[in-house]
Length: 272
Image (cartoon, rainbow, N blue to C red; front, side, top):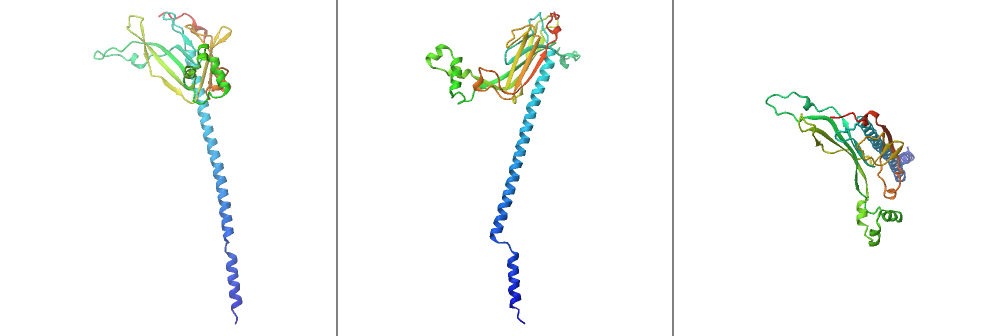
């Protein structure tokens, strides 16, 4: 019996069932492309998720600041005996507000303990925008040079020295809150000492803060005080004021709220 044709056929079938080098390389290239595509979309989704979380934190920070500032401003008051009330500028505000004294002032003292420092129910609150110098290289174009010339006095322009002007150009970096407790020096007198509390950096995710004050029917950028304004407009922004529009209006998105000050807060009703 001749077995050669059968052996030759078996070998041919065995070679036909195997993969060639070209097919293996093509499969590797396709698998690599699919994996790279999947990783790309995964990175895009992860980046989008991080951006969304960061944007949510920024919006949450702005909302918390606006809510807290609104609550404290609605509790603000004017103290005519001490001429303390509210004052502020374009990027800071300081005001007197009523507050419940701390628990230490309510605790009953024993004979062995030294008397607690008398504490009043007033707080001096200050919100301000912390600033930092503009980054180097941000004032190199022609528009920025024109801005510097507008901010420079004639003497500086003649001398050509703009270092002082450049050092004074700042942009927002974070928002601070400072609180001072007002303590009475003696229980039988009206003298008051301000106890300073270290500044608290509320957030560094918001780089823009601006206040406007309602003076009758007009909005002004500064408030000398000590009487309280009829209202305060608060504007918060994520991005700082750029170097190209320091002399213009803020062009980025803002979170804005107008806080109405109660009419009784500015009345001369506190005499002690």
